[in-house]
Structure formats: structure tokens, C-alpha cells
Image 1 (cartoon, rainbow, N blue to C red):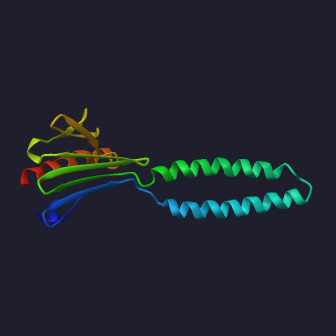
Image 2: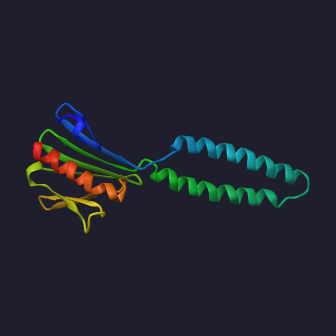
Length: 158
């Protein structure tokens, strides 16, 4: 199958892959540098106030940096979340990564059902052989039905 048939997938040889990732404008590395520069500026200003006789500014600067650091850690933990669906070598492989937790499930293509979990705009349930996985978290709800059709079409061609 050619790549022109697919909207969400990448075709390479006999393999078809769907990479569904979170839309992140800042990588965890960039966020680390931003936080380091924020620390330098905030602690520099707090130290200047401390030297000029306002000692309570520095503890509040530390408190502020701890709160911002915690928020940045939560963001960075989920920045690389994503879903990979691959149809290759006679298997449909679904890999999910969420907050550092990795899950991999394999299905035989002729025994897989692809259907919405509850309605047209809900997550897509990939099920078969007594297992099920929900995908489509990183696709807009109105595009999930198109993604499900695309996966079904690829499975029919497998």
C-alpha cells in the first residue's frame, strides 16, 4: 500500500506504522534549561534583596522555585507520552507510553476488532484474542473515526 492512501500512517516497505504523540512545544531538555535560568534569575534577585536587608524574599524565592520545579517535573514526565501502532510481519503491535509506563500488546491481524469504545468520538478499542487496548488519545475526537477506518483498511490488506 502506498502512503498516499493513509492520512495518519507512515509506510516503509511492508510495514505500516502510526505514531500518535502528544503535541509538545517544549522538550524536557529545553524545560530543564529554562528552569535553570529561572533559578539563576530568581535566586539572584532574592540574594540582592537579602543583602539589602529584606531577608524574607529569599525563602519565598526558594518556595516559588520548588513549586515551579514540581510543575515542570509533572509536565516533563508526560511530554514524551505517545502511542505507536505497527502492522508488520503478520502482527499488529500496539505500544503505549504514559508517564514512563510502557505497555506492548500484539495481535494477529485476522483476529482483531477495531471499534469505538462507546461512541463515534470515543477512544478506539483494539481487541482480539482476549486482550484489548484503547488508542487515539492524541488524536482529536472528530478524527478518531477516520483513524479507525484507516487501521481497518490496513488490516484488510494484510
